[in-house]
Length: 307
Image (tube, rainbow, N blue to C red; front, top):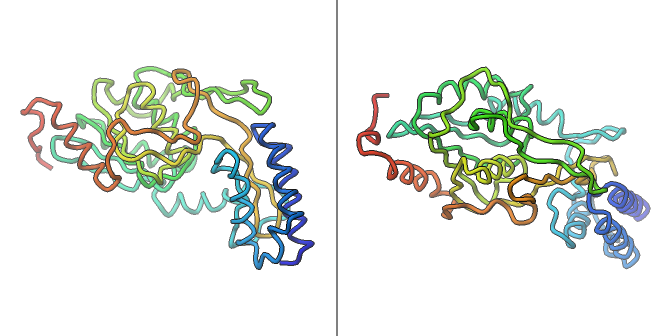
């Protein structure tokens, strides 16, 4: 990359972060940091956009570790106007992954297993697939919700799943802007086209270090409400919703613009991740959660049923 091109990208990144980042004080510090690093020659002679993106991202995340704050590289050229370049990719991915419904099974003891990955796609893309899975799981006696490979997704899909699992509409979080003002609330869905999952049926959520963003939100909401037990590893710790801006044909500045606050915890999972109630390596989480469900049920209820 030419130096003039590098300078333009770094300066635009600094300006966008200072203007939009949810934490204004951190935004100002980051803007100064990028300017200082640029002047010191840290980005000089960067060979390609991917390397520049990785280097600038490391600096953006160096103050508070916000993993949604990035200079993100894209293999395909971005549109000339600011837009979310993930939109078309997400649509394609939803159609090729059955709306993220990776697995629906009934395990021994009439325990249901629902695996959702790689994303919690928006209901308009995957609502039909999800409700079909919920119908299949309706008569199970317990649920294992596998989010170990879920790396994000739609708050609306989180609300839909919570609506199935909660007895009545429940406040999930209030969103605050960079001025510290509340501007939107998220509630579990009040209506679903399938019967709700009985509130006395146990739910275990499986997590890993790869579980991120929207996958974390679902695990966090269910855990904080006491509706589910989280089993596995602490999650990645990305809570802030973000928007994207074009800084180069192959580089997008992603800037978190708000923060969710849960009504019970008074905070969220940013930086800390969702801490499991039962900590175990991710590869063992399914077996551990299944045993935990069966061990707390009458012996007659744990016998395998005809398939």
